[in-house]
Amino acid sequence: MTKAAEWRSVRLVKHLIEDLAPFPGRLAITWRVSVLTALVAAVAMLLQTPEVAVSCYLVTFVMKPDGSASVVLAMTLTFVITIVIVIATILTVLTIGSPGLRLLMMATVSFTMLYIGSASKLGPTGAVVALIVADILSLIYTASSGQIITDGLRFAWEMVALPMMMIVVFNILLGRSTVAILHDNLLRRLVAVRDELSVPSETSSQSVRELLRRGNAEPLAKLKFVRMFKLVSNKRAARIADDITASYQLLLATSEMDPEENSANRQTLLSHVSRVIHDLKAGRAPPAPPPLSDSATPADSAAYRALAAIAGEEHPPYRSGSNSPFFANDALTNPEHVRYALKTTGAAMTCYIVYAGIDWDGIHTAMITCYVVSLRTTGETIQKLGMRILGCLIGAALGLLSIVFLIPHMHSIGHLMLLVFAGTFIAAWIANGGERSSYAGIQVGLAFFLCVLQGFAPGIDLELARDRTIGILLGNTVMYLVATRIWPIGTEQALRTNLSRALKELATLASVPIPAREQAAALAAEIGGSIGSMEKSFSLVPLEPASVRPAESLRGTLRFIADEAEMLNRQIYLARSDIPGVGERLTKLADQVGSPYLARSRDGGASEEKQPSQPDGSPLKPIDARISRMEVLMRAVNP
Image 1 (tube, rainbow, N blue to C red):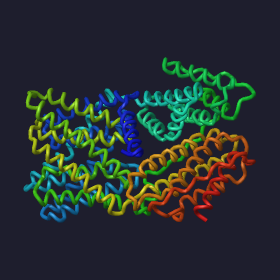
Image 2 (cartoon, rainbow, N blue to C red; image 1 turned 135 degrees about the vertical axis):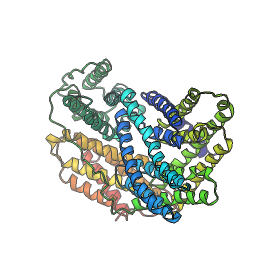
Image 3 (tube, rainbow, N blue to C red; image 1 turned 90 degrees about the vertical axis):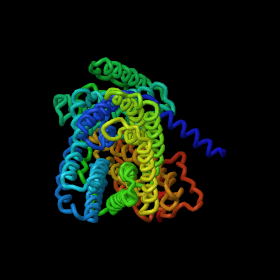
């Protein structure tokens, strides 16, 4: 084994350990998903609703750590499915005698929902709706009488509505509080700051950096649920909003402090952060921070004011971030939305035609799999495919072992609920880890449900379990071929888009007058989120085919500029003097990064270009020096 292969193996084991390790909140969501899935399986079998496995899969997909988010998603999915079923009922009546028109209807509904999901905030929910409709319509079209078709449409609604209603009731009674999750998020940020202030290390610095790259999008989305459901008073909700922004400001200030400096102000901040953590854990309001000495740096002062805001002290109101519309700005102009919908629909319909043509309905899971694994970029799809195949094999193995050794000894619905609980617990634990493992976890659950839940009783048919596993593998194979052969979409455009957006946001931040810039922490959080999105795209590049993989030189250029932009974010935010022309220069850089002429060469064995080094002893100010280095690099690759 080569050193590179050994390093990849070590890194894989490290990622596996990280993804399976416990963390606060993981057990809480895992047991909730497991209990609810067992209840859904039991109720669905008692009421004899079809496709019990799909109903259980929907629970693992819709249930989130945040109870409010789960309720909203469940209600939204129920509403969308109701509308779609009404439309499908009308279209079914019109096409009942024409198999060709039926297939066209399936494809049309699938394309529409996938397109809307890609071009709007509906996101993956669009693929789930397309999956449900296509699966039910494929079953309806095997019926021979109008009554059976009518019952099929009704069962389609019940298949979705039952688990969604149970999710709503369960989360109202036992769901985890959104306010508690936001409280834990604040504590997580404060702990990272405390660790960085006390004993700076690569680990503590990386923790702060990762939190900065997450931005504020997720906690602000949870805050919307808090306000929507009136979980707290308006005054308390305003305090939570301040805590979200102030804690990000604290992270920014901490990341800019010199780790080698052990000043009295640093010790004062460390002592106060430790006290705030202790008070918050004890349920007490944090006190105001003690004053700093006159030698405080801009970073020290920003950290002090952030802690004062967390303590509820009077302060100038924070500026709110930008509000994006439901549909993306390029919803009608970007051909990638259409191509994604066409590719996924084409793959799903191909699988449907294959198993219908050879009359092998047992592998109908191939069509379901196409909707489950499809993502916009080739790298994302391949990563998801690999994890899905691994998850499929694990889930199928669990299902087959259950059929052989456990199910023959089961004699009550309680025994089945225990089995579903155990299988779901394994799947949910994996799914609620990192982003990589979540793909495998969802597939573990789907394969397990499809093997064990056969009809309205525990499954003991090994052939059916085998067929469903073959269908999942077939769907993965078809989706891989489609993703890599038809309109393959690389990560390059995602890298360009996120970096260009970050630079434009930096230009906006630089244009904010100095007295008000500190209140623009929400804008700095959006910049951090854009940089974080780039890091995800960089990790997918090795998975892409050479035909769409960006050149090493281009990756080096984009990464260097991204690193500089990340440091500029905190430096511009904390700057206490204007630098003329910064906004215009950053805007020009953003336009150049988004240019299709930037290093368009592809890898063909070419060596990576050497990245420019930072000049020592530059007479320019740090901000101006960074922008100058970025401009020099851009002129070299894009004259």
